[in-house]
Length: 139
Image (cartoon, rainbow, N blue to C red; front, side):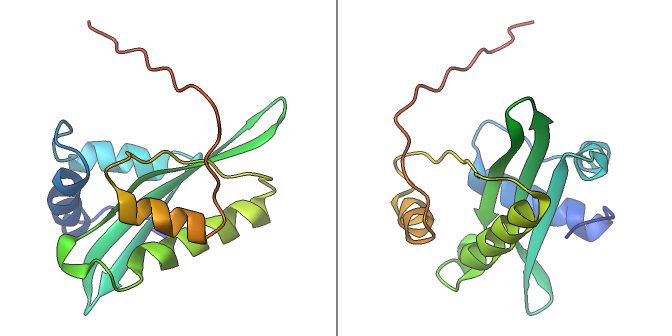
């Protein structure tokens, strides 16, 4: 779990985020401090040969119907894919959510990320029949 943002962490996110999103710029030290400092977030890091090779964020927050848990921003460096990194991070986030009392954990994944979808299904995730709405603030 990430509890302190260092220059190594900022560099790693600068390398990893573009592999996850074409529209999001690399996060700054301040934005990463805000993410890590939020009590709703648990940021997991994966390392290989000492270098940060992956990250994911588990977001948990209470609502009237129970504790909600979401996994967001899962990314493994392209040089480290296929080595079990994402699976290890997923299993750890599911353990943390279960211990916190979350009955379910949700995530979204783009259809073109077929290998990620296979991993999620292998771990027991199922596709929900739902609509996802997004409001984009244009200000």
